Image (tube, rainbow, N blue to C red; front, side, top):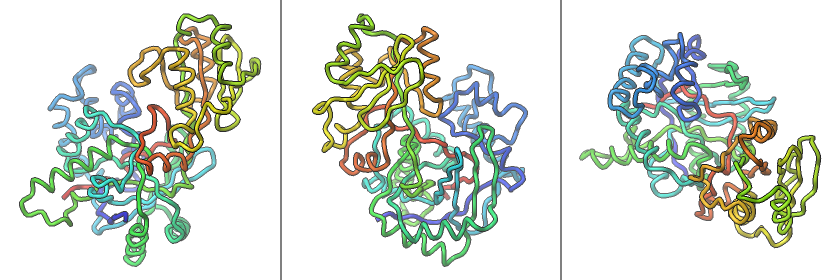
Amino acid sequence: MAKVKPFKGVRPPRHLVEQVASRPYDVLNSEEARKEAEGNEKSLYHIIKPEIDFEPGFDEHHPDVYDKAVENFLNFQDKGWLVQDEKENYYIYAQTMDGRTQYGFVVGAWVDDYMDGRIKKHELTRRDKEEDRMKHVRCNNANIEPVFFAFPDNEMLEKIIKEVTVKEPEYDFVAPDGFGHTFWVIDDDDVIATITQEFEKIPNLYIADGHHRSAAAALVGNEKAKNNPDHKGDEEYNFFMAVAFPASHLRIIDYNRVVKDLNGLSEEEFLAKVAENFIVEEKGEETYHPAGLHNFALYLGGKWYSLTAKEGTYNDNDPIGVLDVTVSSDLILRDILGINDLRSDKRIDFVGGIRGLEELKRRVDSGEMKMALALYPVTMDQLIAIADSGNIMPPKTTWFEPKLRSGLVIHKLD
């Protein structure tokens, strides 16, 4: 059963939230962060990407950079840009994109639930990325950024969302990317108790986005428990900060592929090979979007094509075999184009659906890429089925949007 707790959030005063809040550390590089934080000493980038306070090109993993994060975190608190709440609260965080809003609970998630597999993952993590975030959590003794969870819908928690969100929010703003962010503090003890009890009825939580952050936060908590001779199990480090959304609120968007060459084939030869396993229909110059599961959009030679996987090329009874990313990776990328490792092959790149299919067309028309493949997005039900079966999603399968804004609330580990 999922164990969560409220916590004393560290967060900006209302009038400063837009200056402090930032995009997550892993969606932009150091130069982009430096540019976004320009002229804004209150930007959270000074804590989550502190290399921006050094000369361009300075090693972002240098010990001085982590020290700078700590210095800046303390400085933000000293100056009152971040202030700790006096009591333990839960929070509701809403994100609005394209007129659609999703509501999540900001909670302290239990480290043991992660270590014991009750917080389920669907992606492999890279040790170097984990280690970087572990250092960041360790040195600041805090989860500066939340992780992004989903949970099976719960009627009472849905009711609490409705009751809380009719009240005046603590924060309500539209970020520069056009996405809305709204935030409520839940400080009523009875409501807090109900939230804790309702989460206890939920067998599993699922990592939607932020596998490296989840691993890092849980591993540091576990490390602290082992290193504390007086460990009792109720210390703050036994929990890490997550925003948990009812699964029905979330929508995964497409994650598409662009490839540099046709592996020595002409366009005609390539299409003939594709036709062995797919029904190929030419759609002309107007952008074609995949119509449903097992239907793909191919852009090649200035034209769009519909590709429909033939019966027998996929396995709807297998949580991995049913995925269009599996079908396309095996039958097109591997068997025809010779791309075996999506993580390391330099001939392929990935484009999040937030950029639209026009971005695929642009990259092919520019000559940078030879062909593009658009996939029908994975569903939350598919993600949960894979996590429940203990399987791992193929690389670059899910893209969640909007991303969680960092800096609305921080969780200290003591």
